[in-house]
Structure formats: C-alpha cells, structure tokens
Image (cartoon, rainbow over all chains, first blue to last red; front, side, top):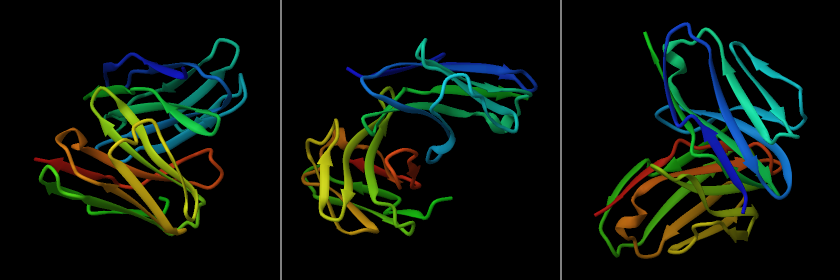
Length: 109
Length: 111
C-alpha cells in the first residue's frame, strides 16, 4: 500500500530559527513529490520535485529530494510568524496524489 | 491563484438530506478532484474526473456521487447526508495530473 509519512507532526520554534520538515514515502510508481502550505484555508502549492539532489528554492524556503533513500526535506530559514501553517507533503504515484498527514508548524514571536 | 470557486462555502444540513456541492473553474483544466479533510486523516480523495462525463472513484467514495457535464463544473452529491460526512470539502484541478490547485473549501456540518 502506498504510504507517505511526515515528521514531526508538530513543531514550535521561535522567530528567526531554521526548521527542517521531513517527508518519507513508499509508493509503487513514483512520479513526483509535492509540498504544500496550508494556513486556515486551502493548501497552496510550494514545490514539485522529480529528480534527486536538485534543490528547489523560493526565498527562505527550499526543498530537496532523495530518491534512493525515499525522502524529501523542506527547510525554512529565518522563520517568521507568517510561516505558521500546516505543511503537507504529497507523492504522485500512478497519477494519484498520496498525502501525508502534515506537519503543524508554529512560530512564536 | 488558479480560478477555482466552490459553493456554498458553508452549509448546515440534517441527517438524511441530499446535499450538492459545486466546484467551478475558469482554467480549462482537464482533471478535477473532490477531497475531504478531517483531523487525523489528512486529505482523502473522494472522486475525480478526467474529462466531461468521465469520472472515477477515490479511496472514500461510499455515500458520494459526482457529475461533470461541462469542463468547468464538477458537482459532488451526498445522496443522504450522515454525521460522518461532516467535514471540509476541497475541490482541486490539474492540467496534466501533476500539480493540483485547490479551491477555497466548503465546511459542511451534518446534524
């Protein structure tokens, strides 16, 4: 059965800290891995990763994929209170997205 | 943001009542999806569509039906609502079955 596991489930840090969120997967037919940010509304797309070792970057957020070890990390540097959200990881397997449960990130001022 | 709207945004209904949720897109994307999101379960796929009149079941399709008569509209019907269907429902669209873009969601409460 396809499975996506995110860790930690929740994380509380102070503004300015750097955080690393993890996503591991076991799927039958990997096509891509996607990261989304969900505040108190719909998930919004952050990154799609298809190749190992190539970092995707957007401002203070970056992500990398390791297809050999079957995981991805999402890094956020110099965190701000606006980064508080649930971060969702999904893996495209046979054109269906398999979703992790999410990591709830709280940034304290 | 992708042009996706959902209606209604909030609904309260009674057990046994049929309910229809609407998803409307202006992006002309071929693929459309209905998810429900519940604490402890994350996002779960209910049904999806790969074209007009072409739909298929997801992992939690029991008690739900869908219809897509036009590219832009994807309807989700709860045939006889139950309290277990209280949830937040998201519609998503995709051009090529890769990245999905989400609508604002509908909060449904079944009493």
